[in-house]
Image 1 (cartoon, one colour):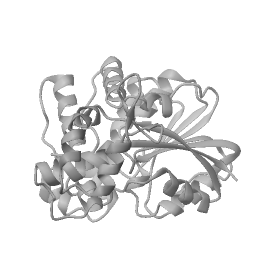
Image 2 (image 1 turned 30 degrees about the vertical axis):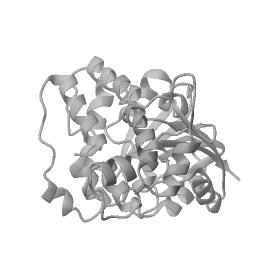
Image 3 (image 1 turned 60 degrees about the vertical axis):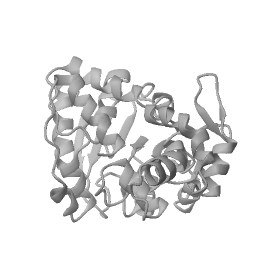
Length: 313
């Protein structure tokens, strides 16, 4: 079970004291596309929230699992805006926008039909059905949204799972208003997850995925062993991808998972390990810490969730 799966497992106990069955490995392994996988896997394990308060409690709990996320990917401050939540999953941030802003419209899109079903049920709990439009994304097809029509595009933890990210970014540019803003969270190469958890804790200490490359082991560590695509990026690499789509961007920083905060205690043991590649050792050696004891690399929090802001060039 991946770390993110364990977070979801804990959330289900938190919410109702019981755990619903996750899709079995055969179903996940035989998924023919990202859409098939995410429809089967589903971010919350198909949990049905019974009340607005329960939905809000889960949303706040989820934000707390990733310190600095809510600052970098805010849901407040978007009054009278038309928002696209691209890859909305079961509606966590849609709920945030509906509770903490007064948007003119929210378009909630995802490739997962099961997630969109959950989103519809959650926005009903939050009395947001009048201004939230739920749409299924069809992979590799043009988005059914007019040119220059969106004020704010929010995409959290999605693009690193897609087979056609350059095309998606081109679509973002097409539908964004001239003064619009895009914020994107993708997995961070310069993170405790990528540089310590995968190469040392998993591959060396636990001897899991030890015969795989770092990238392949990383892919299996994040959102289930059979996740078809799960990439990570340095800030420089992701900004260059955005630039190729004629987007001007900046790296805002990263959010760190509470698991990474625990794993950083293994830093010294990892640096003593001869089998750990020098690139990882140099990364760990370069870490500093802020006043909240969060690890920093090159002055930025060394967490899994890297956040970028883009505008049209």
